[in-house]
Length: 475
Ligand SMILES: [Zn+2]
Image (tube, rainbow, N blue to C red; front, top):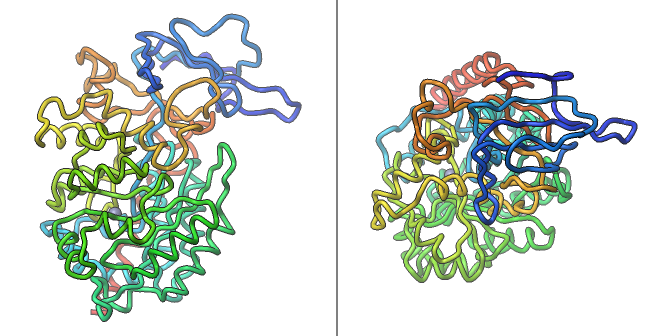
């Protein structure tokens, strides 16, 4: 990438009210707008934190206050990727119980997870965020649901890590209150009380949720799953979210065992159970949704309930293949998620574009299941939609936030693949030359701009070892 920069950095509003511009040109452009508009060679002009113009050929002449010009020759620019399901704390428990299905994997890991504390969660959050940011994620989320007593300010630690990295962020404040003595899966010592979970969630919303356009931090209400949460927590959690005007997130229909659990305990499948507790709606998104019949998919479509599709995690835990082509055909909003890195050791979202496409082609729709453009849409606009932020981010259009990624496609991994979107989705994980969040650089030439990767890797390794020692001593 050649630079003709006036100075390093991204676009900013200066104190004297002058909007600074960043110009990116000579690159392929995939806007992921409603018509999938693409330019073989085009430009994007960023003004302040927004996209000002986008189109074919060179940027318009006569632009003022251009602080940086980026020659994007050999690159593709796309909207920044949006991750819709993750558990950051699992960054320090990777590579364990690698040959298990979900319930056995959870039971193997709960005792270790129940010993996490604030420094561990902070180090894990930094690791998870760094891995995603360097792979083109500009909007991240963390579903955090393990809150051991006396562990410190875990929500604050996670939010500070996201703010340090410079990515847009949703904290889904999770909870579990159904321990084994109430017929749940997690051990009793790993769960909160119903009242404790609700009041801590409300406090997190009051402290951190920012509903404004371009907000960097949002909070969602996120009880963990039907088998770790009481019916009261689901019901009252939904009421809390609607009273506060925030979104709702949980795990749903992930495995055949969960379906069985719901039928035995509640006399119905997961989707009917969610509907009976107020958990279907256009303010809800659910992770996985693998075991869905036609009427479940129709219920999601009718209510506008979103899905976080996590193909690698579903494969890792042998959960099955979500019916993404059927969901899309029915009009269900679908985004992509890496899921926690204890069930997806890589923690990268750009490789999930490829995995979503390949895994779905193994299902009944075969080669017609998904194409490269649809996979890119899942990872960008679809993700923004399920997080309720499609007016702000997820596609490159004038007036939207300047959340974008410049992918290098002229290197050894991609230079001979005919089409840039095909190269990005079907090819190897593409290097990120530049990633902007709200016009500000988060990645430059493959490296994080605001954090030291080596320092993050060391810190996470030390905390992973400390957790392993504590868990071993607790036996
Ligand atoms: Zn999950």
